[in-house]
Image (cartoon, one colour):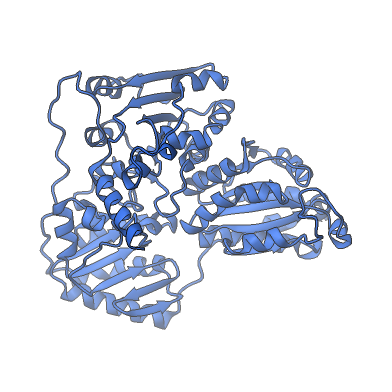
Length: 563
């Protein structure tokens, strides 16, 4: 019987689920494990600048590829990653966090090792991660190690949450049977209970049959839990007006004739707000109803006929059906809905956001104008990342081409997230199609938190477009509180010097300050090909922001004052 090391087994399994780039940093408790990456053809070690950035990168990669793997070392490494891990857990992103831990003998002797708290407790960091993990495992028995690795990979992939896997340094070189790899990990969902599913479908079809003005509203988990195709099929089958939330941006084809826009409660365009809130049935797919995703909880439906489709339950009006998964329900709903929508007469959907009026070429750039223009630069298949702040709100005004994937950390909202996530998304894009573009819009303040990861992009010859919105400080915070406060200011950087400083050889740097300069750049054929890494500095007024962010900031400030 042929055998392989446990460490190599882990990476062979990850390769089988198309998780080909591993993020993280080396540390003495994971070095033997990292050796095994190079034994598996097609696998690569990204080698990040710090663990927080690595966690963000794993998040960006997982959103595109289905799951990611992050490797850190015990204590100092794993704790540095936890902010990123918490964000992935909150936002339903499948990241397997593998931690190299001290040997079992060292733990048993409670040795006073480095990276410990000095109290002999080797389980404390594992316990911390358990609070932000779908499941955890600490490998202690080689006989069950392969099954535990498989269980953790499956849980990461299916739950789309973070999973913690501890691997003692002395175990990664132990031998295990290689033939286990011949049986792929079963990543299929467990079928729904037939009776519960039948009841759910009957109730939903009855509501659809009686509805005169139904709509479909897609949110973040439509993408995270892989029901975009089923959602599109439902739109095609019913012709109901369809909308997305900010976190759901990209989960519906915005070129679809029945796409009506982005719904953000009171922050929506008036036409969108009216269309959604006047509906007599709302089919809500994958909702994550956070404050920034709902205009500070300002959803104001006129109907109680709401069906919520979730990855692990369905809610119909006030009745909840735990364990009934939306993927199977949506599939069957698409197959059966035709007979009950025969009498439905499609209502008009809100008109698209009007195009910007012509402006003199020397007109200074402002965000309200910019975000309406961005859609003309985007093309089918792009991955678009927008940073917490003005970008995440401005992108709601941008009309996406077909098959555009939007990444924005609206719920967790960790400033600097996209600096690392862009690296992960660019790795994923390269693995799928080298021509696929990765485009990030990040503020000058946010960039300062994670700028080091640009050096990793250069190291791997990745070619993202990095648009830096330079408005001289933390504008979103200034809008909420302290517009002139010193704590909202930053040191202004020479952004166009960053790429050569990090060692880039083939690169392009551009500064844009007027509408004419933007239009010229966006229409440049050479610029539109992702042939090199690019940094584009967009100069904006200090307090300039999209109108919906200004409104959100007022709501947030008022809420904070009340509390």
